[in-house]
Amino acid sequence: MAKTPKFPELLRTQIRHEFTAAQQYIALAVWFDARDLPRLAKRFYRQSIEERNHALAMVRYLLDRDQPVVIPGSGDVRNDFSSVHEAISLALEQERTVTADIETMAKAARADEDYLGEQFVAWFLKAQVEEVAQMTTLLTVVERAGGNLFEIENHLYRESATDVEEAPDMPPVAGGKR
Image 1 (tube, rainbow, N blue to C red):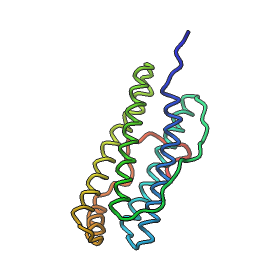
Image 2: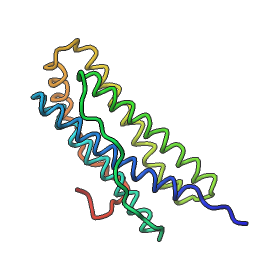
Image 3: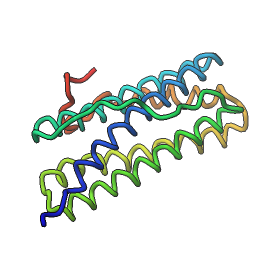
C-alpha cells in the first residue's frame, strides 16, 4: 500500500496559517494606527501583505503541481492589547510558530521524498530566520525604549531607509504580487 504524502496536506494547512497571520498583522496595524503610531502601523500593514503573498505562493505551488486547493477561512485574530510590548510579543510568538510549522513541512517533504516540495519550502525557511530576527530586534527596541513610543517610531523610521520591498527569489504567487 502506497504511503499518502504528508507534505501537500501540511502545505494546505499552512495556507490557512498564513492567511490568519495576515489578518493578525492587519489587526496589529489598526491597533497601532488608532494610537497614532504610523511607523508601527505601516510596518504591520506591510507585514500583512507579505503573509498574504506567502499564502498565495503556496497556492501557486499547489496549482503548478496539479494539487487540489481550497481557500480556507482564517483563524481567530486578537484585536486588543494592553501595550505595544504585548502586541509585538504576540507578533514574535506568531513568527516562531510559523517557523516551527515550516520546519515540519520541510521534514515532511524530505520524508515524502518530494524534492520539489523540499526545494520550494527552503525559501520559506530562509525567510523565517529573517522574520524572527527582525521581530526579536523590534521587541528589544520596545523594551529599551522604556515606554517612550517616539523612540520606537524613530527606530522604524531609520530602518525604513534600508527596507527592501520584495525578495527577488520569492516563489511566484497566485494572481501576481500585490
